[in-house]
Length: 89
Image 1 (cartoon, helix red, strand yellow):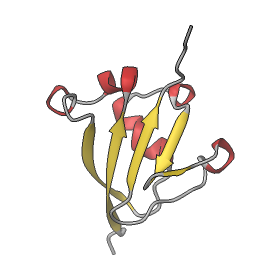
Image 2: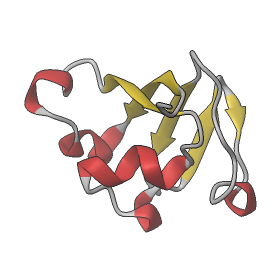
Image 3: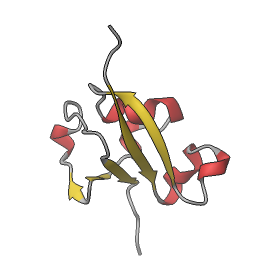
């Protein structure tokens, strides 16, 4: 029996956009079909995004605390938006 899959939109902002395929960099997002058991590292691993670079993570506009990221699973249609640390001066 095949594993259930879901559709998730991954959005990578600021300097993380460079990890997306060239065709997706303008929109900063890519639609993915992933196993229903996927966690955040499963979403970013195919694009070689360093987990340490994922500073701010929102799922459907709601902050996902760092402690929940290793185990939080997603639902069909979720939008995962990720920002790197931002330095100011």
